[in-house]
Image (tube, rainbow, N blue to C red; front, side):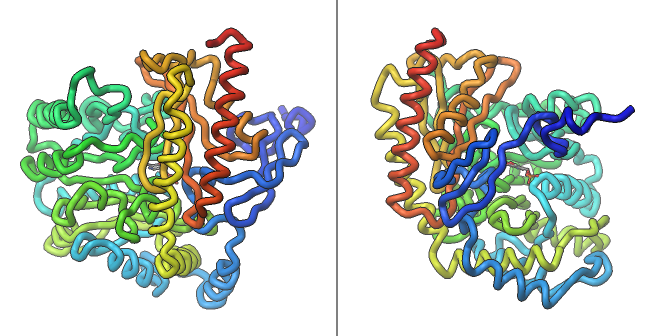
Length: 472
Ligand SMILES: Cc1ncc(COP(=O)(O)O)c(C=O)c1O
């Protein structure tokens, strides 16, 4: 049986198969051109850079030179047998730009999912190398997103992974879930930040005790969750509390910074998001990164491995089991290094931290003061922010899932020249609408004003449309 090509407006097997896709045709700096249903939208301000990927923006003038040089130097060798200096140099660069002594080694992969997949295996082998093979359980969070491969889905918890649970790693005995950390939704009336933190930490500690600490291997969280619940900034003491519990029960502490890391939210002009919350001595034992590492020009992500883990391997078999064809890919590593060097040299992580926070503050000022507005919350940090849309601001009631309000917001925003990522997410308790903002690191104050103005216009239009349709 054949599928009539005429039935398909696209030959790409993702999203709505038969429908014509929305295409990004080109761009320059913070602005891009999008084609949708035959209409061309020029001068769209790229406020989300795909999925928080872009650091240098569109068509950076230096990147073609970096790519050209990289291509001249190296084509391919299999890293399991013969590696390349490009991967070494990128590892040295990353480790050097983290607080001293925090990481000792890096593995370069091609996606965030793959990084988390590899991290799960590194963690598993670590426990065996040190003679603790019974440590097999990992604890991550409800409503989290760590990627789409089976291992990454198994530590995730969302509507997407729900559909594949029957073929994922066991969720009752191996991949356990603790409560999400979502102050806007879950802090109780009258509860302080510290009390909320304490409540969450007590649940984790009890979970470790109930599951036999001798069998618990790692706790894994996104430092600043992105596409899952939308840049919910961890409350005071939360990440430090997780670190302390991990220390107490001899459990590894892993942070997923695929979306929030590599310069997007660093307060010191460097790379890690956790530096906002943790001192170097409380750093994660292992961390995954991606997205802005290649700024969209190459498909690169990674796993950063701390000395505790590296030492266990050295004291054990000395061998990391397994390798993939495109681990440590020379072109990816060389281009990524060139991009990261430019970012640090030009102070662009400092720029996105400053102008990203300015954007967040201006969005708050413009959107949170009207008690009748459908904007329930604006939250985030540095270059990563979320606008949460609600039906009732006072009760925080969400719009019905079927309305897909976040998609409506995407459409209206595009008409107004703004590219954001609107998502209607669900769990068993209900759904919520968020719009993510993650512009490239080069944004100026003028770009911030453009993003805020177009957002305000789009929210007003959406609110008016929902009223007209009787949905408000
Ligand atoms: C926190 C987090 N981890 C992992 C991933 C998976 O990364 P990728 O889509 O590159 O596989 C994502 C993707 O959005 C993410 O946000």
